[in-house]
Amino acid sequence: MSDVTILKFGGTSVADAAAFTRVVTIVRRLGGPQPVVVVSALAGMTDALFGGAAAAAHGDMAHARRIVDEQLDRHDAVGRSLLRGDAAVQFQHELDRARDELTGLLDGLAGRAGDPAALRDEVVSYGERLSGSLLTAALAAAGVPARAVDARRCIVTDEAYGRATPLPADTERHTQAQLAPLLGAGLVPVLGGYIAATLSGRTTTLGRGGSDYTAALVGAALDAREIQIWTDVSGVLTADPRVVPSARPIPRLSYAEAAELAYFGAKVLHPKTIEPATARRIPVRICNSLAPDDPGTVVAAEPAVWPGAVKAIAHKTGITVLQIASTRMLGAYGFLRALFDVFDRHRTVVDVVTTSEVSVSLTLEDARALPAIVSELRALGDVSIEPHRAIVCVVGEGLRTTPGIAARIFTTVQDINVSLISQGASRVNLTFVVAEDRVHEAVRRLHEACFERERASLGADADAPLGRAAS
Ligand code: ADP
Ligand code: ASP
Ligand code: MG
Image (tube, rainbow, N blue to C red; front, side, top):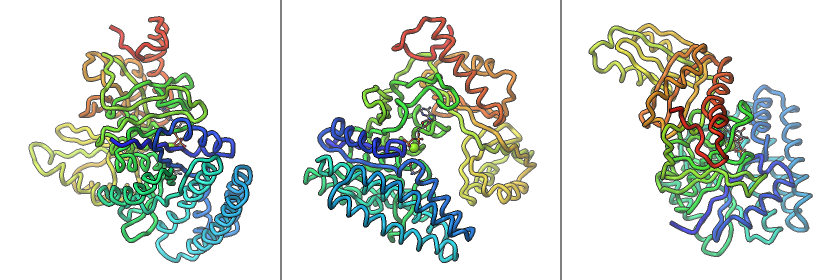
């Protein structure tokens, strides 16, 4: 283990000048002996740049330019408020260059010059490139010896623009080569998250919310002692706070619990973040940049097993359920392979699967290739499609040892039609599918049953484990 601490700041943590000032204070106070900073684009910047790219692709260059101008003006305002002298002038020049380059790229999208997915990644990469420069300058202005590092020289990926997969060995080698000399010289590297490059140097991105993943990849490459994810809530909460306002922070999660929650919709962590951290057993801490002294959530190897405890409820909308029924499945081998080959060919991820003797049900989030997939599946059996579904995922290491937990969960949502049920092999989750328009109700009711009702009746204090099952 090294002395490196990774501090990753999400978009809301760098939304404006006041937020940048908070970040500078956090890096100084909590960055440990060797901080490495990973930063997202300013809040709303990535969405805006995608909007600009779409406008350009539709031929509306005036709108695309307006979007770029608005966003660069925002950066300019932050720069003016935080930077002085040469640093201010240099940042102005960088913004001017960005404006010219972005205009060229948007023209390219409008004129259909080149692969639009590659051009889009190049356009949106300016979000993290500019926030990286701005944060480096803000840290330097406050006396922190920060150096901007282009993350595209560290994170190496395949060519799947928009959702690229890192090449682990190359990423580790490049990251170490870029960062070790800086760390050796006592400097604080600052990288944009989310952005990466192919081996031939073309810009790619890791999928929306991917800055968390960058932080984990860099943390693994440097064998960091901790990866801190700084966001706008005080840790991973017992449910999505936008659906359950009374959701509370969870003090500790195992890697498996955090991975399931992230995968099934807890937006606070990008789903791939946990994997590099688990491989090196690096603790991941989720903290609130608006309340830096709140304890947050620590994700680490030792699970806190509270018998019967549900730790959290995640949910994810926009799910399609497919059912494939075929008597050819009976006693035949090769059927499932033929079935999953279809999804492989269309590079479509299947989230949840259940099988019976004559049918398979599965869920997809990415429905782009659905028509082609369904037409190929028809060769294997009868196919039915249920769109507008949602996954609910109840998570807790204690689930594996708690008899009766499924009965409790399903009693709570008994009048809501459940179309598919699965208990993951990791046995830290129980997952089911409901109609999208009932999912908020299902999550609220489960939260009440698992966390609120019993806490009240047990008179639980704030430190007691949450969600203890009724005995
Ligand atoms: P950042 O910009 O810092 O990466 P995100 O918006 O990606 O922040 O993630 C933080 C948000 O995730 C929270 O503001 C919250 O609305 C949402 N969220 C959804 N589920 C959860 C959960 N279980 N715990 C905490 N936050 C959650
Ligand atoms: N800026 C990127 C996004 O909005 C990456 C991130 O914030 O993690 O998706
Ligand atoms: Mg995020």
